[in-house]
Length: 271
Length: 91
Image (cartoon, rainbow over all chains, first blue to last red; front, side, top):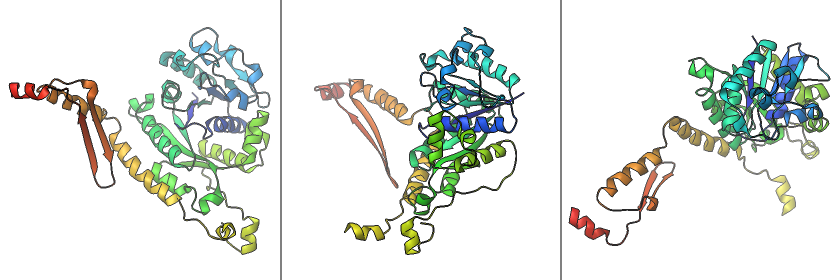
């Protein structure tokens, strides 16, 4: 029986899809059988970030509605043979998803894979609630910024009340993933620090992904950053976060601020 | 002036963000799962007032403003002309 992991946030643009692709690929890189599922019906993008946009024939809605069988809709990754994608529909809207249908598909995927990684749409509407509905674990993607932290808090409340696990009196295991972290700005007091975010959200930290050009470069070419440039800082951070998901205990590396030329000249420390 | 600014660090804004979030989330968490307080207040106030005065439900505005120490509840009910006579007659 595989685990169902939802990657969610409430707020849009914080890095859910990028993180789904990177964590999904990292899990597969460590030998797990993985399927990444795009729940963003009508605005699918996981296929693009994964570099499979030209191979989509059937999608999640087709499978939910019984128009296509699951194996017809699953796309195998070209780089990793144990990584698969179930794309969302680009033309339908999220009302085409039914709870029974999604439950059936997620149940089938659980039988076939070690990890079912669900990429949630932004917001708290049907698509987002169905993406988290059957989750065992959740990664809450948060930027160190007030609106993102507020929305994460709201999503945490929903994970604790609106999931199947919560309704059974169990707990969805929750992890905070801080993305787009700019160490220099945090050091200058311009950006919420890691401790601030964790204290406010009272949820354990899975990893800190630094703001980096490598993330954009990877999505430009349609490859998860952990595959495109495994040695880069964000890839290393995603790979470590994934090892924590798999149960390893690793010391958390807080990205350090690089000293700019001006500060070096002036002898300032970690500005 | 601009050159001077280069050497002067601006005051940190992160502590302000942190404090604002803590106050806001403490409130939002306490409200979670409850039916909207304002909607309930509006319905009940409307029921009480309309027992005595004929009014247009669309002309009733209930607004709440939360301050740091004190919150205010503002109720604005527009009464049609001639309702005072009706008040005197009934009550």
